[in-house]
Image 1 (cartoon, rainbow, N blue to C red):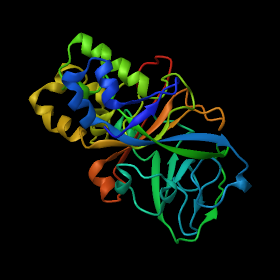
Image 2 (image 1 turned 45 degrees about the horizontal axis):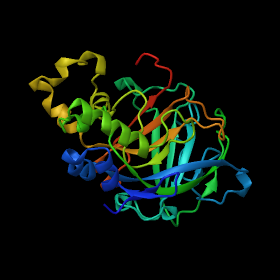
Image 3 (image 1 turned 180 degrees about the vertical axis):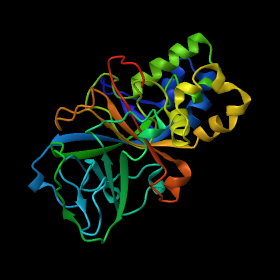
Length: 299
């Protein structure tokens, strides 16, 4: 496997090495086939005036064309979350799925903070893809307090599917392998409890309250998850819904972050998109879910 990460000791272990050391050779090919590149983002507080137009950043005010209406309109404007300059990203598998030389701007209704578990939450988020060459200006609006501006640094990394995900469930691991995979996952992914350490573009989400693929599919199709939760979801009539859920993938996750004074109940905002929509550069096929720390009941 091409990928490797330096350990604290200074040694370098490839994913193959780690799989072998964890005793996961039986499912090693499944793990390697499922692994996905991602971009880890780290936020550092900065003065808005010092951040160039079109730069990759968290918070502050967005850089928008004069002709672009602020998402949510003037009556209920959404909060600007982040923008990603795709030309700033290092090379990684999956980069070609993003629009080249574009500014991706992410908005979310922080004022009401819908969790995304219910179909009625639709319309509380927006992602804009602005082609380079479009004149930009740093835009402000009334009725919304900006997140404290931060610059994002970018780093290529590897991500693995969540141990509790449906995908990992298909590997049919025994209890010892399951425990070993959790150890592998936790060694490679950012620390679960580290606030501000889990901003990420593409790859697999670092979840707090479970896998979100089927949730995105259900809610986006007008189905509230509690109406089919449990064994009934695995009945034959729901097979098309389960299969369609596999097309959803993480676009961006934004963590609560002290540098930005951003607190989503200690949790994260996850922007999900259909794979076909991403490759078609169509950002209307999105669903957003927030997950929070502390074991609060799901809505």
